Length: 115
Length: 109
Image (cartoon, rainbow over all chains, first blue to last red; front, side, top):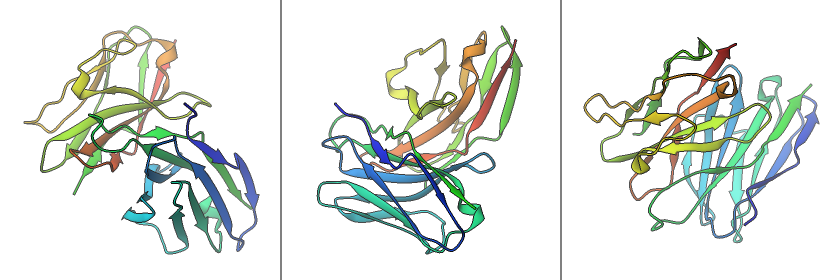
């Protein structure tokens, strides 16, 4: 079974630009979550989607948005980029309920650098 | 609300010394607790979950509901244990997984 796939792996953008990151979950997983990982703040939750609906949202400004498609693939968008948005963005998918446990499977992340 | 607290950002131990990575949680029901690990240049992956009560790579973690803790322990640290460790919680019947901010374990040779 293919793992969680994130594209692109690396991005360099300038301040003020916008960026879209993509995540393809494991086949059959309907829950997709996004996290921002930085050395100083660790792993911070951005949002979670389930069946195309945003189910939870973290404490990030409105410049961070996302969506999920009918095939469970998800995209994350950051507008008006700031230097502080430089981070590793991780996507994780989880299996559907009823499988006995909830585990998050992570992609390798997209390394975003804002210059 | 679900919350996971890892009080230490960095834990340095000597090779062969015992390791304890602390994790405290807040959840009103019966949670599922996990430890995830991220080795250098690898993806974040599950290390162990409390319901399976297993030892993985010499690590164990016991859920203490009275103290709402799920500390990760290993009796003798090895250099290859150096990594970032995240404690995580999931509420029963719900898929959202809440992570702590992580502890970097550094094993000194």
